[in-house]
Length: 190
Image 1: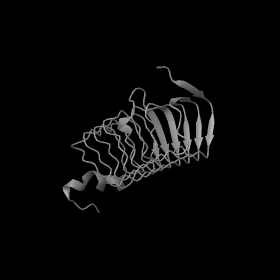
Image 2: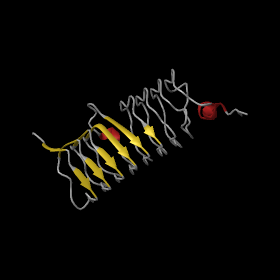
Image 3: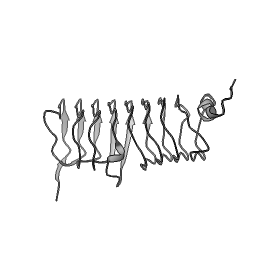
Image 4: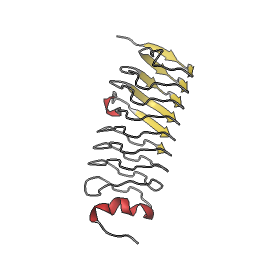
């Protein structure tokens, strides 16, 4: 089945709960102030698209594709990104709320999470090689068997990860972040 292609369009101030999105391939489109909250986005492809000030909380992402997509100032609560089509999956997040999202087992090499809230996010078995968590809050985020090689945590805060359960070779941490690495040892850092 050949998908319809929607190219280079601006979608602004649309509540997609009322106007269901067309199952299509959206290329170089911008979505501004749109709501996709609890909307079924299954089998939709977004290629080089931008989402600005959008709410995608609890959207259904079965076999959705995000390729070179950026999210800015978006609310993305409870999203199961691990339900997405993994081929060429790539996105970046700027000033977004991603609390309770899941990236379980995803290849997220080079992904940028800048100024984001990532409370209780599941990064179990994800590949975050060369990812950046600039000024992001990782309270309760779960890292287990996660590849964190060359990952930048220098300005991240509230993370807790076990260096024995994760691959952290050449990852960058600040001195202030040491408690997040050594917490399991129940030691006092002064």
